[in-house]
Amino acid sequence: MIFSNSLIQWYLQKKRDLPWRNTTNPYAIWLSEIMLQQTRVAQGTPYFLSFMDAFPTVFDLAKANEEEVLKLWQGLGYYSRARNLHKTAQYVAFELGGVFPGTYNDLLKLKGVGEYTAAAIASFSYNEAVPVVDGNVFRVLSRYFDVETDIALASAKKEFAALAFELMPKDMPAIFNQAIMEFGALQCVPKSPDCGLCVFNNSCAALQKKKVAQLPVKSKKVKVRNRYFNYLVVSDEEENTIIQKRTSKGIWHNLYEFPLIETEKEEGFDCIADQVQKNHFAPNTIIGMMEDNEKSIIHKLSHQHLHIKFWKIKIKGRVEGGINKENLKTLPFPIVIYNFIEKE
Figure 1 (spheres, rainbow, N blue to C red):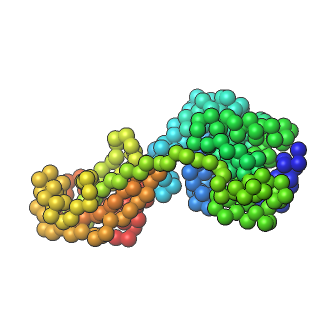
Figure 2 (cartoon, rainbow, N blue to C red):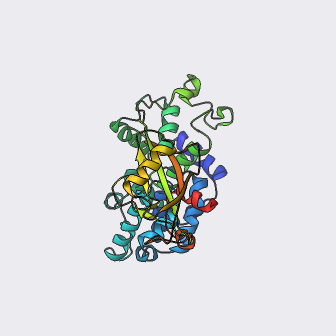
Figure 3 (tube, one colour):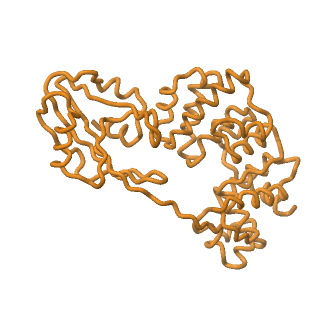
């Protein structure tokens, strides 16, 4: 197949030297694939290296406590990935004797492993002929073959997987999957790809029909919810503060934060000071209270925009159950709170 041969030839010349590409070890490949879900390679690589250094085997990761894992993950976001990663490591280590399932269908049974990740591990580690379908693959195939199927539809994945499987040389599934993903990441990029330098500029249907910018078709728009977080940074006479763990379902589960007042809109000093007094957020006598950032920090998540303010509250005496700055820095926090702590 001309498409596959050209693609693989391009890959062998242009591919990036990434640490998880130099191995067929399913543990390392699984780790990299979980990290690279919703994360760019440049951002994910240092985390991958840190994890491999801290937890060189699935047994090391399984034996770690969740807080260690979350702390090392801090800043990567989508923290359910880290919690699932830890649970899956424990299952593989303690239930499967440290051996990862050897087929696509069995890999799908692991917590946090979907069709894409299972296909990546099965093809890269075990050379099983299963196609990977991610955003890069949707983009490359929809443009090259002028496929106008809406990729937001549930049926789209099946259609593109069938097309990728047809194109895949069955004796080289790993290299084909790597090649098509790399091509989407480096050459056939979402906006303004350099089609003049593309190996497919004589055969790409979208280029010939001037439809590159219109493909792939994706209709569904994410509805974003705005939330207003007011963090109360209590400080006693010994510089101890109060923190709490987010145990409810939702964002940042099992990460730490300062006491929180969530409001319906952005509020000023009077409203927050009133709530602090009424709800006894500061257990001792308050000496002073000030707004740390007059303008909210906007922290963007996939479905939510958080408008965050930090309020510094100085109190008399010693706070009960307080924590000092040194111990504070050892715990896992959402990155926006971690950055606040670091600059203090």
